[in-house]
Length: 448
Image (cartoon, rainbow, N blue to C red; front, side):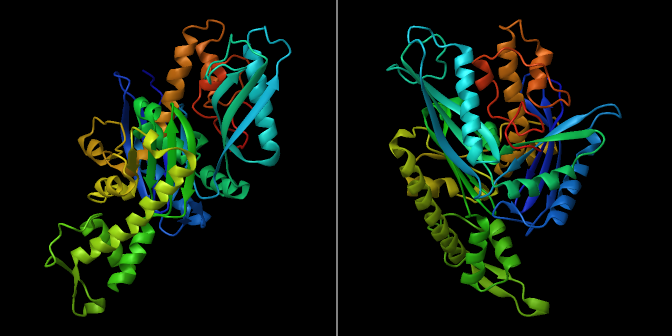
């Protein structure tokens, strides 16, 4: 168990959400406080378009959790997310003929490949968020995550690089600086899909093959995991706002009424809704109310979601055989709250589907109820990633007396001082789920 209190900050297209969380005595993430503010029209398709208003929304959400922060001499660290269609997830391979094929592969050899791959990729991609090693191949041996000790003439390292548009990242940086206070520091940045996966997917799903679909108001993020590795991810300019626009147009009502109808009376499947069921929409400035068919509402929603299901199937088919994804589809994000949405996607993708509620708890009954909601998946994942990294680091540390726990903690980026660098080892590649974007040379290649 770790006692660090970590803050998650999810900057979305409709809301900014903040949470404060720590591990309880059972090692489970416990949420102590939540904060939320409306951010409509300030982030479009995952990209910040109004810095001032987004900054104000961040401050409002963070203020709501400030009461759980410790005293004057304590510093707390927060993690935030970056999304948008400008995010690129690209495979990258690097191979070398080895000097002596009879020599076992060493830690230094692997780390050298890792650093060279980062330098080579960064030459053409100036804003690298994460470097994910996904496997190695030595000679004719099978792929492995740990090639140390293997022998062969050639070694190949395979990676997934996640990069962002530098100007879009800079806009986020400006907004995050506003969240810093005397006792609230740093601001590690993660690609949203990686954070979300940590709160809603389990190891078995990632191993057997799963598609994570995060349905936001401005974007939809699709991530494919196989063999416990991220195989592919993409961000679509497709979100719940498109459904709202269809409702507005199809029913000839205002956007506000369309959004309210979707949230309160919407359904992803229309077949069991009686034709006679109607909702009265208030008229403008006291005018006569207008009846709206709930079945017609569901028909509009279902047609738009069928379109998204087809896009998801096409995206999967570009990367892998859909039949190989034995764990099916996990739907999360605010859009996953729509009734019967899992049933619709199961029908139109051919994959088993479930709703991904975040795996966290709270001693406060009101908070415990609030966070059992897929719209909290990303913000909770931002905190969970930190503990996942620390857990892996400490497991390694117990078997490596040469690297003190204190030094390992520094390497995660949650301290201001730079650690002395320990001898390279294969664990350095996999200790962290991602290369964290930090303001020093030990983290990712972009800086905050």
